[in-house]
Structure formats: structure tokens, C-alpha cells
Image 1: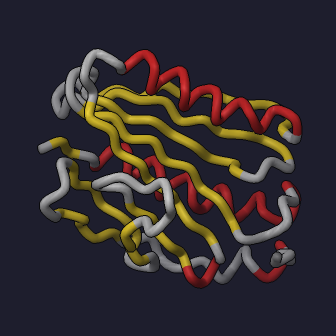
Image 2: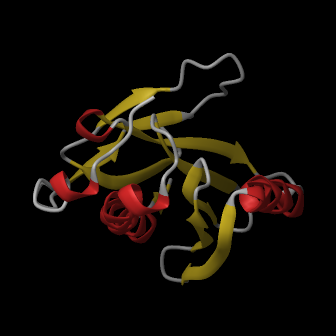
Length: 168
């Protein structure tokens, strides 16, 4: 695992610039140009699951997609439980509700403070057909002090992804 020295990160962030992820998937969104979208190759993967990989930062946003068929409450509760599994190492978890009625996108951003393995997680849904869960992980020893500037940098990217999401 990597250990980051925060002093070298504060000036080395790339400019914010985004490009569109628009494929045959049931959703589209904008993601940073300094990242790469790759299919999820994990053993539990399902259709339309992807990873947004940030090679310069050893970070990945894991995105899973589920069709909603009367089971939205289960997906929301499962995702909340996954976020709150980090309370063992977390100092606090802040939930920010997101809603865009025009795009039919509603969600929650979980900002997990402290030395948790995943410091940012989110869910997005249209409440009827689509559900997305995302989680940011770094291939690093969790250290809230050294990762704080990096997490803050990626929080903007996750918020941008949430705000640019469209269902198909």
C-alpha cells in the first residue's frame, strides 16, 4: 500500500476538466479527463458496473448499477449499511441529500471523515427504474491527514458526476 505525503499533493492536482461517458449503458455522466473508465472485472460484477480509475492518485471510484423492480428500499438500505460499516474507523459521517427533479436524479453523498477505507460514497436513483452506488477507494493506508487534500479534490469530481448524470 502507498502512504501519501500531503505536502507534495497540494500543488500537483490537474485542472478540472470533464468528458462524457455515454455508451449503451442505461446512464451517462461526465467524468474527469485525468481518469479512465474501465469495466468492472470483479467476480461479483454485474452488467453496467464500471470503475473510474485515477492512475496518478492510486484511486478508484467503483460504480455499481441495479435495475429497480420494487426493491429500491433494499438498495438504499444496503448502500447505507455499506457506508456505515466504516464507522469503526470514521470520526463522523455526513450525509448530503442531492435532488434534480428535471433529470429525475435523487441521491445521497456520504462523506466519511477519519481513517476509513472509503471516504466518499454515493447513491443515485430515479426512484422507479435505476439505481447507482459509487464508492471511492485509494490503494493506500488510510490516513486522514495526508489524504485530506486528495479526498477534497475528488469530492468535487464525485459531485460533478452526480450533477451530470442522466438516465436513458
